[in-house]
Amino acid sequence: MLLDTTLRDGEQAPGVSLSADEKVDIARALDSAAVPFVEAGSACTGAGERDAISRVADLGLDATVTSFARGVRADVDLALDCGVDGVNLVVPASDRHVERKVGTDHDSVLETTVELVEYARDHGLWVEVLGEDGSRADLDFLDRLAAAAHDAGADRFCYCDTVGYGSPEHTARVVSRLAEHGPTSTHVHDDLGFAMTNVHASLRAGADLVHATVNGVGERAGNVALEEVAVALSHCYDVDCANLDELYSLAQTVARATGTPLPPNKAVVGENAFAHESGIHTDGTLKDEAMYEPYPPELVGRERRLVLGKHAGRAGVRAALDEHGVDVSDEELAQVVDRVKGLAERGKRVTDADLLTVAEDVQGRSRERRVRLVDLQATSGGGVPTASVRLAVDDEERVAAGTGNGPVDAAVEAVRTALGPDAAFQLESYHVDAISGGTDAVVTVEVELSREDRSVSVAASDADITRASVVAMVDALDRLRAPTAVADTPPTAD
Ligand SMILES: [Zn+2]
Image (cartoon, rainbow, N blue to C red; front, top):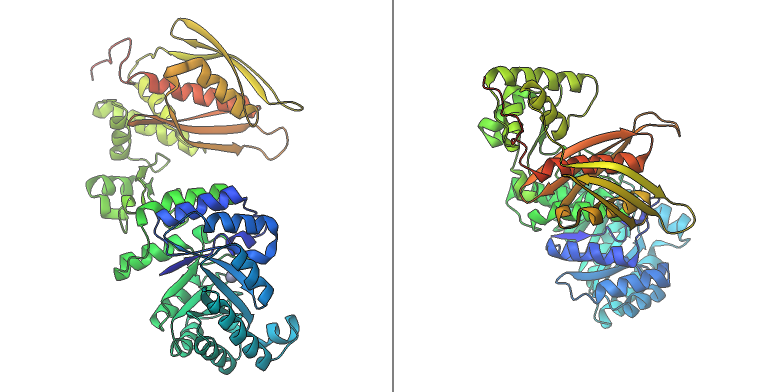
């Protein structure tokens, strides 16, 4: 089973602060993914946090909604005020925490724990006791603490590797002792890169509830990543602990809300997790999808991507052209592959538009542009960001204005208005890269737009980010407007 603590421990990551609306969105997404426990926050933090926790508690989720509470009665009362189902009651376990942080002794910690567990239970709460810094605690004391918590009626006791300190062997030794007393959870951090391994060690040693955060967000090196635990348990042990096909949208929701982009090489949810570039890998993947993948991307709500780069081969390029309805002869294909590699070797990311332009050139086709940017004006600073655009659409000129969060948003709104019903597209992704580091940097904006079952990626560079964004978007729309293979002059035969 999983307990998600993105909204509490994840939010403790430096620079992360979630609004109540964001917490509600994430909690809903966790519930859709069938995560059974959601720790919504820490009620003692303040009125804003309590408002957010109450809103999550009122959503009527299937999940058990809990609040973190320090080992003081006032915290349990504040959690009760929020209407949660349970508390994650944290008490000091290591001597560092008992003596230096809280300034107390083992017996008093045991006494307070028993008293608070009984109090929380009497008020109808599900209770999990967390022994903070348990991985560095005296094992005999931790053992007594777990026993006392269970005797007092706690639903479970949690092994906490608060600073990501333990080896897998140490984790197994401690958890197996704790599990003798009753249901045991595990809460591990990734400071040594051992988070996943320590989850495995904990489960083997008798734990049955894993604390995790989406994308592994959290203090320092973060917590163990929820999506990785869910996929690994399903793939290797046939243990179902979440709706796997919801994991990717959950990861994106959390990445957006926390402002923490997903690393491209992140397991399960990274951009490259199911992308194949190398010619040999692409060719193998086209022959057998499982050739270079441990499990199919659809399992976690994703799609496989074949990326064109300097390792591009004939099979991959042909497949990419096929997707856009472009037929090429073997000779043409060889030329397209050479030129795609050439682009990539110059350090360029090869977009769909680049590929299609190369193919048009090789085949001697000229393409009539149907949507073109004629003029763009954008203002920000002071009032509401506003933009106006003039587009040439077929033979007609269209002018429109828009407002938005910023100039880019306003300009995109203006484009949508100018195009009217023609703007029925979906913005799949939007990336900005600064080519040089200074304030005079040229930026490259890459967008991917889709319409019905077609999608196209286009990049544009400019010193002005608004202009680069609009140019890329208009070019992508132009590509999407008509089937690409339809050309004014028929393709020259072989
Ligand atoms: Zn933690």
